[in-house]
Length: 308
Image (cartoon, rainbow, N blue to C red; front, side, top):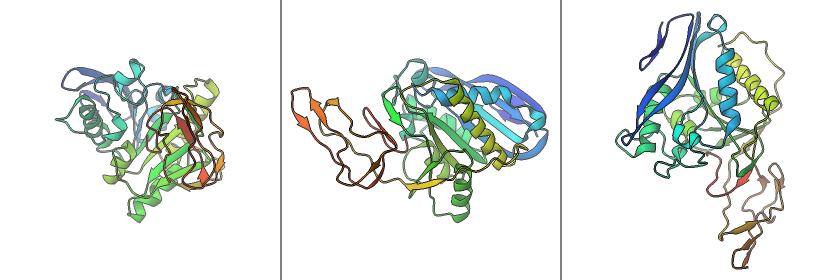
C-alpha cells in the first residue's frame, strides 16, 4: 500500500524525503517530512519534533532516525517530521510563534480558519496525525528551562487506549513517566488521544543543550518504541524501571524579577518547601512555596506546564 501525504508518496519498500507547503493564511511554510514505507505490513507511526524553538534534541534525534531507517527493516509505515513549526524554530522563538505570539501546543487540533498558528496545528493534524496508529511528539528543555527527562501521556477513560499508551510510554527507557488525569486541552498528545490515537510527549535535555551522545540515546529510545509497536524487529531491551507520577500543577511567581532557585529539576518537594525566591526589579522580594508534595520536573521562564 502506497504511503501518500499531500504530493509526497512512498510505495511499498521505499523511502521518500521532501517538503510540503502548509498555507497559514498570511504566508506558506514548508514542512519537512520523511516517509518510510516498509516491505512488511504493520502500523503507521508518526514522530514529530520542532514544535517549539530552542528545543534541539528532538530535532536532532528525528533527523538521525529518518536517516537510519530502511524500508526493508520496517513493518508498517513511519512518518517523521523533524521541524513541525518552522516559524518558531527558524526564528529562534521559544514557547510561541513569531507570527502571532501563540503557543502551538495549546491550540491542537487547530482551526483551518483561524490564525497562522491555529492553521498550522490544523494542517499537522489533518495531514499527519489523522491516519496514525501511534504518535510520539519530541520536545526538550528549552534555552530558558531546566528539566529532568520524562515521558508524558493523558488518560482518556478508554481502558484499552490508556493501556496501549502507558505501554508506549514505558518503551523509551526514560525512568519518569507522568500522566494527566484527562485528555483536555490543546497539547498535541492530548488532542491525539481524544481522537483515539496512543500518543506520548517525550521531554529530554535542558537549557538548549546539544550533545551527540544524548541525541543518540534518544534515537535508541525511539528504536525501543518502534520495537514495542512491532515496526522493527529489535531485540527487547531491558526495561528501565518506570516511576509513574500524576501531574499535579505548576507554580507561577506573582512578581517579575531575578530568580534564585533553591531546588533543581528532579528534587523532591514537600508542600511547604520554598520553590521560587526572587528579587523584584524594584527590590521587592517574593517567596513562593509548593502547592503539592512530589518531584519538580521542570522550571523556567514564563508559562510552563507538563503538557508544553
